[in-house]
Image (cartoon, rainbow, N blue to C red):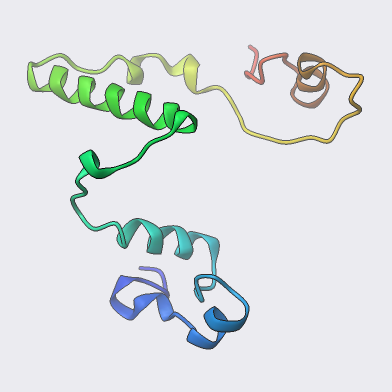
Length: 118
């Protein structure tokens, strides 16, 4: 259990919040947990106002709902059997504008797509 958690209100420092920090909570993970916990257990998504930039959220939710329905009918998800899809790693780089994204990826990660080869 993290030191800062829901039971102690994430040790919010109100002075810090008032003068220096939006949340008043120390630690990125703790701020993430606070944001998630503050949503409550059930949220009425029909009152949500999504924009075009939320397309990934919508697709992810649809994928999860479809997988849950399929699992309810006895069809197990395929993702655990497609392990090659998890061989992608995140990262960042600063590069000259003259380089294409593929070239930056190749130089930084050894692959134009960022996948671990081999």
